[in-house]
Every structure is written in structure tokens, then in C-alpha cells.
Image (spheres, rainbow, N blue to C red):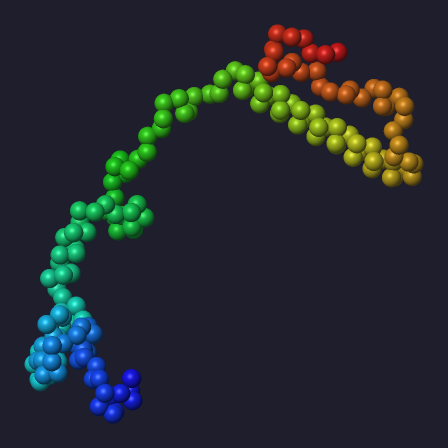
Length: 164
């Protein structure tokens, strides 16, 4: 392309130095697209490009007043309304759970407490065995005395008696 310009080949179309819009000729004084001064000592300020466009700033400031700010920006600037964005709770969302759910929660909590107690007992037995230097195998009498499961009623059938 540079070679074509040197040899007199096709000459590229003139473009505005500011916005790169194509110009009708090389001798334009102002750009028809952006209004920038191209030749001469005319006004070199182009609003929004080389100078601040005060009208555009005022237009944007007026338009921004209508838009709600984010809660964080409103809180920082001190312009916020607590009641406008307050979410409302759905009806029944704060009510206690039904009875069968509460029973299941209690059953799980009791199972966790029993498991923690059994683990603590086993840990204490292991510590004692290590201190005395004996083996960790359970004695026959201790294995028979330990309950297999806690005696808790079934959450789905509370009227039935627990297995013995």
C-alpha cells in the first residue's frame, strides 16, 4: 500500500484526523462528521473530544437523577431510602417447622449426641489401655452391655413402640 502511494497508484481517500471519517476532499476546513477543525487556525476545541461538553454533562446528570442508585452508592452518598428496597418475607416463611420435621430433627440430634458419647467413651478406654499397656480388644462383658441403637420412636410412625 505504501508502494502504491509512492508510485502514483491508487491514493487512499482522505480521512479526518480526529474521528477517522472519510472526507469528500483533502481541502476540507472542518470535518462533516465530528465538526473538528482540519485546516487553518480555527477553533481547535471539539466538544467531547478536546474540550469538556458542559451540556452533555448536565444532560447526563439530569438523566441520572431519575435512575435509582445502587444501595451501596446510595449509602456512601447518603441518598438512600430504607423502606423503598426492603424485601418482604413470604407468608409462613418464619413459622416453625411442622411436628414431623421437628421430631426428625430431635432424632438426628439425639443420634449425634449418642455417637459423640460413644466416641468419647472409646477414646477414654483407648487412653486407659495405652497407659496400662494392655490390648485394645473389647472384653466379652463390655460388648454385651453396650446398646446397639438408641431406643427412639420412628419419626414416620410415632405411635409404634421402638424395638427392644
